[in-house]
Amino acid sequence: MIRSSQFTKGLLALGVAAACLGAQAADKVTVQLKWVPQAQFAGYYMAAAKGFYKDAGLDVTIKPGGPDIAPTQVIAGKQADIVVDWMPSALAAREAGVPLVNVAQVFNQSGLMLTCKKSSGVASPKDFKGKTLGVWYGGNEYPFLNWMGKLGLKTDSDIKILKQGFNVDPLLQNQAACISTMIYNEYWQVVDAGVKEKDLVTFFYEKEGVATLEDGLYVLEDNLKDPAFVARMGKFLKATLKGWDAAVKDPDGAAKAVVAADTSGSASLKVQKRQMENVAKLITNAGTKKIGYLEPAAYERTVKVLLAGGSDPVIKKDPGKAAYSHAIYDAAQK
Image 1: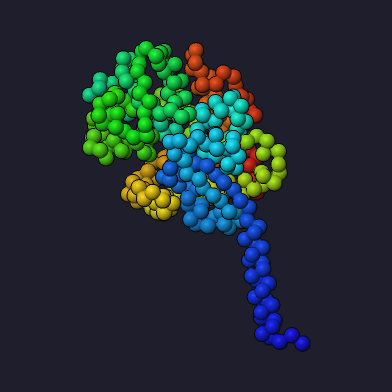
Image 2: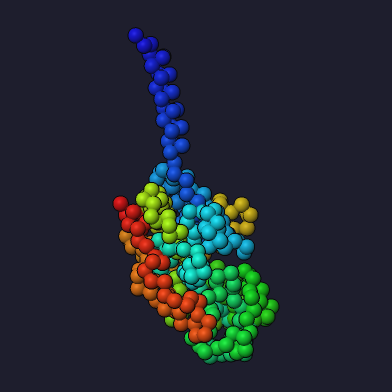
């Protein structure tokens, strides 16, 4: 006969063993972000903070980006399973030999724009000629270069490009007539610095017809041949999209999750909440089953924009349907 104390100890031992086995069984996923912790990536931080990844049996490492980190290089070096990147840089990298495939599109609207001081004399795109324009590089320059090609402006003579750092100083110090900004971030840095909104003029890439897709999720093409990888990433995507839905509905909670993840201590709740409220405008299908789905028509529009760069297009040939896949999105729906 087994004594009750022995039986209880046996059950406890089995419980501990099961817990250890469960912990060991968690699938590891590493996601590389495009920039430092901010509400631009709130969905990933919310999914982690609310336990969505853990509930899916995942052990997710969220790697922040920075000025010296290129997601395409990180995944090419097998240091991440999946990366957040803009489609222009992803397709350019694919053409250069890194076989990236878009497997989900979180932002279905572009937040990129040029922000100019009215005092610079810029009232419309036709006024860009002869002006100094701030442009982000490191893969972010492609939409701008294409836009200038569409306007017929030569970037080596008609305009002067200032390779802009990730700040708004060139506008504040009148070193450039216009600078690159995101509606959820740098635009508000200009306003916070004391420039009144009425003294600014903005040109949204979306409204100018030169917008390209931003903040998509990309994996290496060969990995999609592995059913286990697709299933694991399907779980990751499902939990991530749940995190994005939660972030859109709860800007306060999203801001707290971002600030908690920022080890530098530079993120503030007020700024991150405002940023989340603007990021939400770029996810018009949040709360629906279509969140994260890459619309083929949107992909084709982006490709068309990138091919239309005149003598210096971002990509030289249409990558076709091989550059995107709905396999992981479909797995996430199961």
